[in-house]
Image 1 (tube, rainbow, N blue to C red):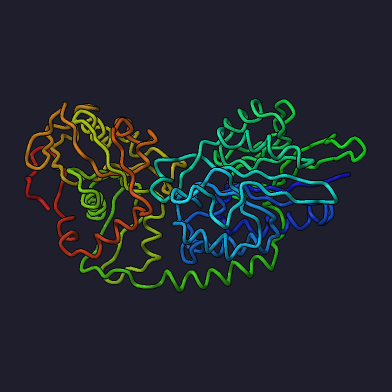
Image 2: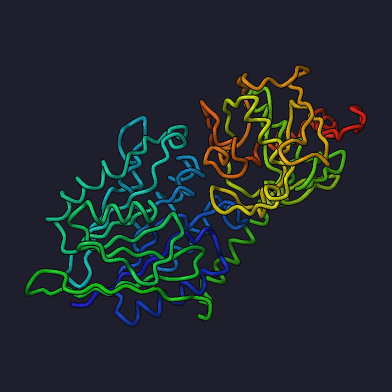
Length: 480
């Protein structure tokens, strides 16, 4: 008995790929037979940087999954941490025609999974019972703020495997945990036939065989569709063969139904994103490599949002400036697309000074970043608020800064300061010392663009953003 499992992961709202993905899925299902094929997505299908997603609260993604014939999905962090429970309930409880399988995301209030999710799902294909377990990456500091009591995967999955194994012929774990955890699970948890992975964007052109488990993944952004062909021996009642591969989609024809569907939803999204959200009395320029009013505005917004002494954010979070006049929701999305959350933490004066020094160096400003929620191009310099920095542009590396004032007082190396910044720095990416902050406090579900929007609506904040924070040696402190 031959069966086929098709899988995708980490598409991240790359809608330009979805018509081709649908075409591949339909061709591969037709080859094997609909009654012998199972189609799964392993999370992070959604990414709020894309207007089609942002302008419809993810409905475009779910509509495409429905129309493309997916049987089940699990959630990635981009679904679970980007939306509140009510939006997820609308998407997966009312819009979805597939099963949402996730075992480690109970609600804090009830201790139970939401009504739109199941910890496991059993489907039959050609008389064979296939068990699906879905699991997502564990970020308790973030999930707790959204009302989820996310559980450690290795506390939840092993007992569920033991429970489900006697009830099914083939057992699949849909794992949005990353490659290292998939390898560990395959090695430590007996009874799993197939792990379909995601989260760390790893591409396994040839699956890994670890013990009796086949580990597969299709990279990122919808570039590949994964295929696992299985052979079940009904006489022996066991899986006798499992072969995995990936199919590139770039040269595939587009499925016209899916292309048209995306186009329809894109029009709805454009209408929503065209709405005016602010009106500016002045133009707001930006600069990745130097101080700018828009960068200052965002840094000041982070400081005020979290009641901190200092605001810090990398200039690369901003991908454009804003003209005088009306600002639409779509313009705000274009210039600040990253699903990054505000974060307050404690940093010493010495840690702050090192980060300020690094922000003057080309190797940091030009540093490209990937992942961690960042949807920009380069790190850029540091935008600051609550600080006045005197520096010598010609000074030696790590010795350019001559003085730093915090609230009118000199920066003290040993003192700890409350700093309003971003969650990305807590992952130890970007400026090295900012990853050493203590007592981090995350603010969800707000993104940076929510902070920025509040500041754009405040005339006093706009005017203050033109006040300089960085002063070269010999330059007047009153220069604006």
